[in-house]
Length: 377
Ligand code: TRP
Image (cartoon, rainbow, N blue to C red; front, side, top):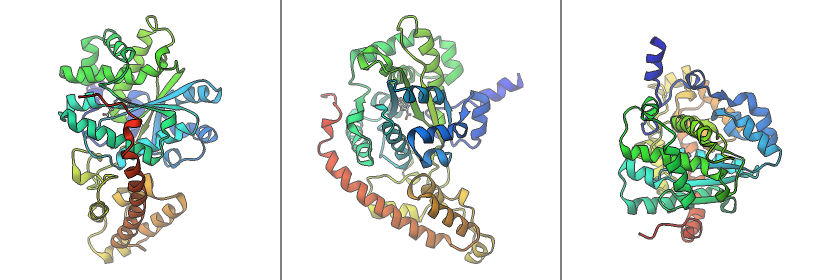
């Protein structure tokens, strides 16, 4: 019984703001597998990427199966979704990087703008959702997601077969199963769940290209949806032949700049948006948590703790290649660089990145409706 209680405490909340401290527990409790055992194979197929070599994408389900399909030339797709509930920030960029990585393997991407979910769980007005969705699509393309190998769609404005799939999925689950996974939830969330199940499974349907398998790159907070979807895929198998269980990968969630909970649109002080004025972005960076020592003297003597530092996290996830990263890490540990100097260096990298990104974004946002069909209301 003790174990069951513990598992209860360890329920993942897909709509919460938790930071997951102990990623290892996820292996044990939810049966995720570490990606490091697959590293060589991933790199052989997709090339080197910091996502995997740095353990940013740290776990998976059935990624080996997915890679088999890719290697044997089978049709493979990626599915992901974004709640367009606030500005597009560096946490979102991590998903863009993964989409690009898989697209380079020849994988087609289906990218949902989860406006139905954001309406239900974040109470964002429709108009705002449509505007944000355009902004997200333009950011993704500006970052390098190839629109020719992607389908962008709104959850509220897609094909009939997708809604039929959501309806059929909902009839394969009992209330007590839902309760065991999510606790007590309102009907809006229940609909959001089955909509997401349809997001994940629809590329395997005839109507959408009959892909053999999909991979879903997500943060571990989304794993409840993945587990449920995998069960539903099996149960729907007799009604919809060819439906396959999705594979998934899990990335570490970037912490907020304050070093606290995960980077989240609902806490402006926690993120740097890819669209904010560069001065504001820079000043957020200059104020970010570093965990530095109280005095410069102590910093020189004892060194810093890069693993706690948000500037290091930005380097690690986004801004630096391996050689410079290593050098700064060592310098910081040995007290040979102080936080102020390091932040000024990071601010320059950030400025260069944002300059270039915003220039591309500004071109794409003007024609973004060529890439996503918005509902006409
Ligand atoms: N629920 C996800 C979030 O909170 C968004 C999402 C919607 C999604 N549909 C998806 C993620 C399909 C992965 C796959 O951000």
